[in-house]
Every structure is written in C-alpha cells, then in structure tokens.
Length: 162
Image 1 (tube, rainbow, N blue to C red):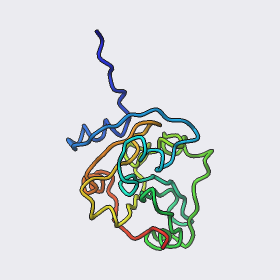
Image 2: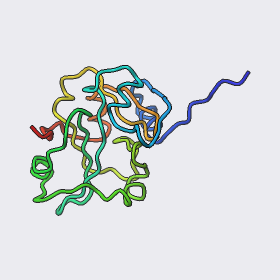
Image 3: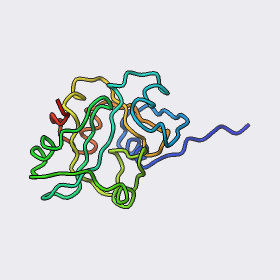
Image 4: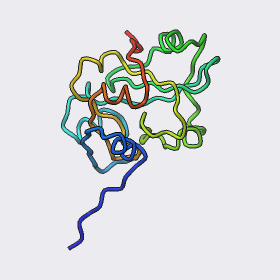
C-alpha cells in the first residue's frame, strides 16, 4: 500500500533546509473558512496561537509582511512607524501571488519569492509555539516563534490594534 506523501511547500523546504523543528497540520478547507477561527476549530487549538500573515505595502519601503494573532486586527499606523513608513496599506489581493508566490488563505511568512521585511506581533515572543500557514490552503505549521523570527529575519513589535 502506498503511503500518502506530504506535499512540500516552499515554507516546509525552508524549515527543513535550516533544521528547524516544526509540526505540519493538514485539514480540509473552503473559501468560506480560511480565517483563524476556522483553522482553530479544525486543529482544536486556541485562536491566540494561530497567526495570520498579512502582506502590506509601505510608501517608503515597498512590500512588508506582518504576522499577528488571528484574534487581532493590524494597527496600520503602528506598523508604518516600526517599518519606517509614513503610510502603509494592504497589498491588493490581485498582486499577492505574483509578489509572494502564495495565494490568499495560504500565505506563509516563510519561503516567499523574496525576503521582505517582516514584523511579528510582540505577543508571539511569550509563546512556546505558534501556528502559521505552511504556504498552501489547508496546511499549517507549528513552530517556535523565535525560530520563525530568526529564519525570516523578523522583528517582534507591537502592531495589533488596541
């Protein structure tokens, strides 16, 4: 009998190449259920551990990446300040795949086409493990936030709306 082989995404390849321990989760998905709430239910983990990856453009720096808890909203002003921009806005969805190599609902901070400045919510620093997209809808990676920070050369910063 054939064993089901896990499809490796760029994110998984990067973790393995850098000898970073991770746990991979796969689950069925639909366009209606791509958010942190649905992922939390499928994986049966606290929503605070699910981090969403947002791709933003800054008026000075160009593309930047933010990872925040699925329970939070991004504070655009705070992100602009820490990233050296006066103004930031979400990257248009139509540009997401050509910019990052990933699609909506499957955008990982790991393994994008280019290394963009990345900012992770300061809340992650206090957590043992967080869960981010593995680079494909229905796939998530559980990883130590400090390993993630080092791998993508990110900064831990306060970027959630109060």
